[in-house]
Length: 495
Image (cartoon, rainbow, N blue to C red; front, side, top):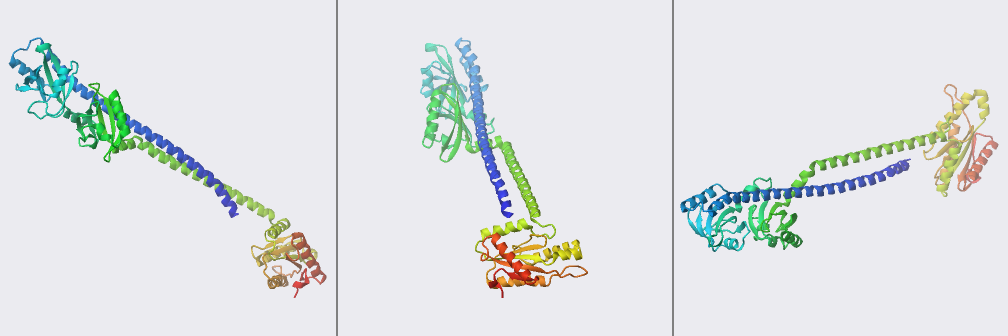
């Protein structure tokens, strides 16, 4: 019975375990895909942010161009010729724009600034670039844009006035330190930075975490290439082709995600760098609720499978128990509660087949004069004799022994594993003594006797039929001797 229950449990545990593994794998794959989708969403948000910074930055430069354009027209048309008026106009242009310097100079770089002071920028690299180009409106200026001054990196907004020897330039210096104002509009952490680089990866200006390892060499490509050669190669191609994208890099233990977008000016690229920790936090926020839902779903599936399996196992075990009970009822003699003839024979045969060398004893018990008991005492009392005999003899032996009613007044007792001759005789005496003292009746005691035959397995029968005939011969011998006694099939067991 226990083995059947274990088999039932195993038949459900294995499929349930397989189902759970399949569900876990599916949820894991779904979670992995969801994580990737969340990462893609975060990188899209970074690209969207850098696009916003680009628009703000170019918008600032365009504001300067828009403010300088009408002044350039007035100067070109000679409507402002007086030196005092010119100085006032330059000073006014500086006051109404977000510039740290405004210069009006000739083709040699000589001119005045917003303070009316004379300046000379002819030897500056940015001015030589202005002279060489005819179309560039925005020029990068390194630190120290004005002689004897120490300004930071800036973008010079250029308005050209006139032609030939009369050519002049209105220069508006926009500090790249203004990136800090752009960065303040975002919600990035303190490890984030914003920078503009040229096509060679040279850092033109930066704000935010300017001490980042990625900006330490003033060339972004040189900084990331040793540890990230493949990402550096891809980034160089994108800088050359003015394309947008993202890249994850690590420099001296600092992990960072770069989002870059071309400015459309001078092959410059604006790059937003955020820490990998920030990206991971954003990814976590992106699918936090979904992760909770997946966790609850996994728990619910586990509980459902466990409950379904448990209910099915309990139902199966109950069904098996019920089946076993029905089988037991089918094997029982209704009057005595002992096994019936078919069940008794079947169980004895099973034991013989499994234990062919195990010495055992078969008793055949035939109640003496049972017809006379029925005739004189009545059938009800006869049934009481059989019922009482079944109850008492059933309690006399081990639970593993086989005791059954195999006929109207016949009983069969099979004692398993009898080790030696002494025990054989001892068990025989026990049965003999039992019938010497067996009585039935509540008010009037009636001593019922029996003729008992005994055969020993396997010596007197290696199969059931042979052993049964030997025990039956013992019964015949006991009746021939006068009934109310026990007789062995073989005289060698007799004392």
